[in-house]
Amino acid sequence: MRHDFGSILWNQPAKAVFQLTNSGSSDLVIEAVHPDCGCTLVDWTKEPISPGKEGQIEVTYDAALLGHFVKQLAVTTNESSVPFYLTVSGDVVLEKKDYSEKYAYRIGDLYLDADNVEFDDVRKGDLPFRTLTIFNAGRQSYKPELMHLPKYLRAVSEPAVIHPGKSGYLHVVLNSNLLRNMGLTQTNIYLSRFPGDRISEENELLCTATLLPDLEKLDQPGQPTATIQLDTTRLELGSFEDKAKLKGSVEIWNQGEATLRISDLQVYNPGISASLNKSSIKPGKKAVLKITVYADRHHFKGRRRVLLITNDPKHPKVTIDIHVKK
Image (cartoon, rainbow, N blue to C red; front, side, top):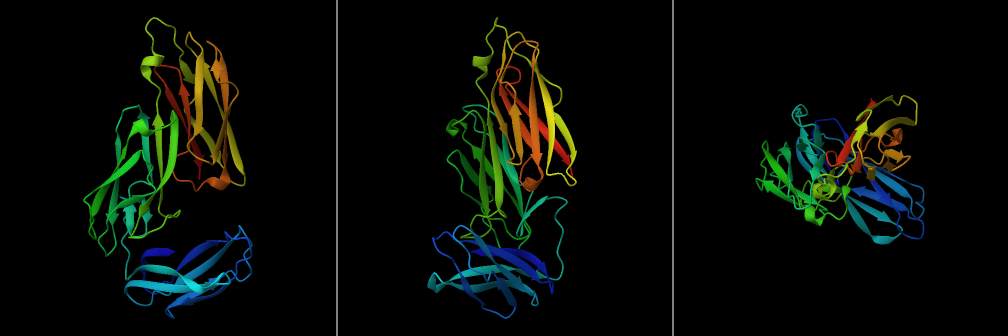
């Protein structure tokens, strides 16, 4: 397991926390953690860790010396006499440059213009691509790679290597023919920060693709069609304050001449739940979409949105943006 601090200020200690899960059938005990240098302080869960439960190891680097560092820690447990190793690395600098105005997201010494990749309004046969801009604020050249790519995605770096102080692009290409389901498909992909990097929340990127139905099947000349109308596509829910959840609703009307069918209702964010009182709406009638947002899942990457897939030929996809005040 490895943690990259990126750039840290001289004489300002930095802390990393490694989470350990006991996947065995008996208690796990962390017996000792031995750093390879007195510049690294450690603390860890002293009580036994039950099966399925988590413990942690806290590592604090004192940042007393300028320059690049790589430190290892040997961890011994009651499971094996052979230790496993944790690694922390980074660069100690006199001052840190702020790239946040141009790049809103940071992963170690890498700055990105987005923490998610969205493919909207995709149809079978399309090969769309989205581009992430990456700035290398570190001292080492960097080769951009994405881990855990599903078969329907591939990534191309331009250039292949981003040198220190330079920016580059990571083009993510979607093969829509390999998407299995209509509507929303979501997956987490991971930006590799260094050779041998592992997946974690820190280097996680959300990727979404919305596959639309075939318009030729929806729009039949001379046939009556459904027409969807919402009282809003932007739902303002206020602020959580001390509340655990916020609730709102959206009215969905059928202004057409044929029955409006909502074939799919999906959320982009696990912190949202949505329910519809009926999925078939006769001409001139309405349905009510109830939406709940939960406070304990605000950290999720990506936007708060609800997706509807319909048989309205002019609006086969409708999205509702949900806004919560900070």
